[in-house]
Image (cartoon, rainbow, N blue to C red; front, side, top):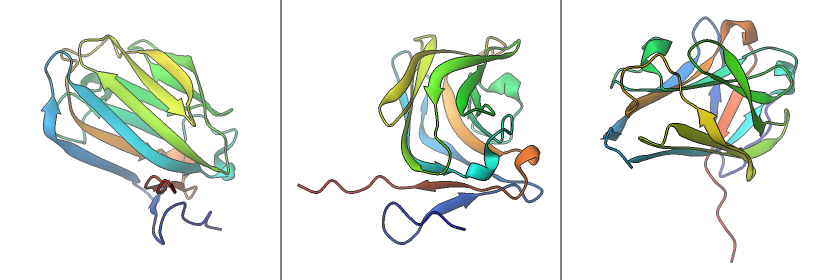
Length: 168
């Protein structure tokens, strides 16, 4: 069943039913040294994805197209079978200090500063601020991003929602 929305009455469901992804081109490209790209959302990873390697993948591309190959993705990471976020270095996947928990809403903060040579992914405030870049890219600027539900997780949803309002 659905986890229920964390904010309001609507949430986004990403699921592979042949093809499953969401992507967007940035309204202002982050291509200059010091430009910041931030992806901030509430996320719920179905417990049905536990033990599946790379059920979901996050890629940030150096072109405006959102259907590129990994050679255009300076930022490339996936969820491991135990919930550990693994990044792609250009020659293989490397575990980070970031871990998701299956079956509960969590706050994901993904941030990259162009030219820094690293990026971060925090889950509920914990995670890794020293994630490496894909070394097989020619440009480390960011113009678009995409979240994939891979074929090995067919029919298993990932949910995204807005940040809850802060009650004062």
